[in-house]
Amino acid sequence: MFEVPKDLFVVVSGPSGVGKSTLLQGLLAADLSDIHAKIIMPKLVTTRDPRVSDSANETLCISNQAFQDAVADGKFISTYQVHGHQYGFLASDVLRERNPYDRDPVVYIQTSPTNAGVSLREKLSTTHDVKIFRLMASPEAIHQRLIGRQDQLPASELQLRQQSAFKATPEGIDYQINAEQSPSAILETVVRQIKDLLVPKVPNTELQLTQQELEVLQTVADVCKSDGTNLCIYAGMAAHIYGSTRTPTDLDLLIDKSDLEPLRKKLPFDGMVVTEKAISIGRLDIRKCPMRIGDREKGQLWQFDNAARKKQIVVNLGGVLMNVMAPEDVVLAKSCLQRGADVGKFDLYDVQNIITNFGAGLDKDYIAQKARQANVLEMSSACLARFGFHVVDREEMTASCSRSDTAPAALPKLKPRALDA
Image (cartoon, rainbow, N blue to C red; front, side):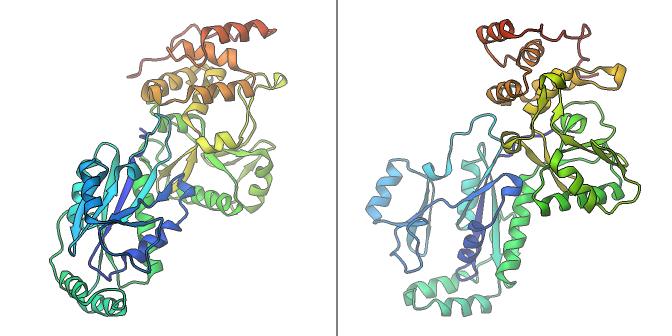
């Protein structure tokens, strides 16, 4: 079942001269928008003297007394000492209020000794995943790099840093990176690991996509990504990802109607079944949006707008990164369609499972917004209220129903199956 990822704190450790600052600058410029994440570097507060290379946005040099005062005031989430200087991260830079339906993680990055990273992991255990990446290089390579920085470091500090390069590797490291690679290779490795940590993995044990099907899915995803086309998983597979216990039988994908024909022209597969509304490749079914969730003549259509795109989540499905329709949109669509086992569907069962699994983690305001847009507020609200999930208050529901020239859609008499069915 999908779980909202925690914020991630990446601690970059390693001896002086190994390339920590270079990696941090590369990470700051990295684009994680494809997994709906962003990277932030908390300001490093220190008692050392300012350097020419320091950035005011990244480093704050203060006196020893000011540092001790900040410690006494509880302003730091973590402090440590290196080469005779004090360092710390401000709690206000690392801790944030996160509403229950904010599913987009923040990646915090900063340098720190490994032992300080281990301590930070303990302090942030409830709010962040803390992972320590240690850059490793030979003493000879580190010596040459430190010599190149000699004009910026006092001789005494340079000697201390050279000595630290020969210390044994501490415990608590999550990833060791060969720092004698090119900076671009190091950055690519770390970004790949960050994405692997943040993107939930969907086991391929239920749908059991074959290797050939996964290759087809990867090709479709690559074509859409290169064209800037939004493609997402929806319907039964989306419900399954969000906790519905029934087994999906196929993989339904949704694409904007203007993108369906351009996609068809670029797909290289033989045996595709193409209609006006869909492209079918084996068990992969790509359908165009807007999606009917009620009476088309009354405009009861779900729109693939910017709000819906922002709400999507990203999963790793058998090694393929895929967008998934937000749980709110799955609940909204299925609460309106209300199809049953007589047509091979289990809409209310899926709604019940998703509401049970997410609870307060579902954004009611967003559901109401999309329901109004699709002219299905009465129908969806009445259905969802049956599961104790109230999208709008009673007064708005009554007013909405009184304005409608048709009665709200009748609910099926049969209750959804129990969760352990």
